[in-house]
Image 1 (tube, rainbow, N blue to C red):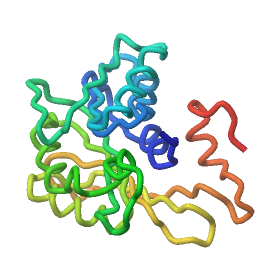
Image 2: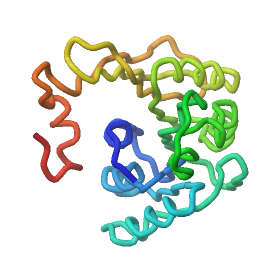
Image 3: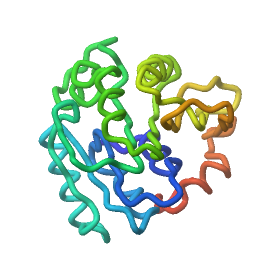
Length: 218
């Protein structure tokens, strides 16, 4: 599976003071789970993936990583998955096209169409799996985030930090990365991240943020 900027950014930005139990919903090739294993050295990471081939790729990537003992791959639909454990940190780079256009490849359609995991289902799952003082981090286009925020609010989950992602200088924000926690707060941290300058080069902020995860970035 292609490595996307959304996943890399979420893996860089998702935060918690000291997580010991981490959940990555829809791990794909496992990039976010691997980033979190690298960043949080005391955390055990559970990665869920519904699609067989993606799950096998993630499993292989985990086994070849420096942290195989802390990474667990579970091939399952989070809507059906049950866990006795609650998680300090939950991350998700969810489907977001909502059937707005057809995707030919079945695996890609499952990974990116809204037929497999609705925002309502995602909100239900996160609410039941998140620790009382835990954080749920998610990346979505702005319109999709508004819909997910409404669903999460029904479960008492509200934004604690909002990061507006601007793809290029003089462009509008097209993604948001948001940290949700249980209980409403008036002290919401809000800031933006610019990925590329006008000449299409990566900004120093982006390069510094992702330096630990790219072999080379120009």
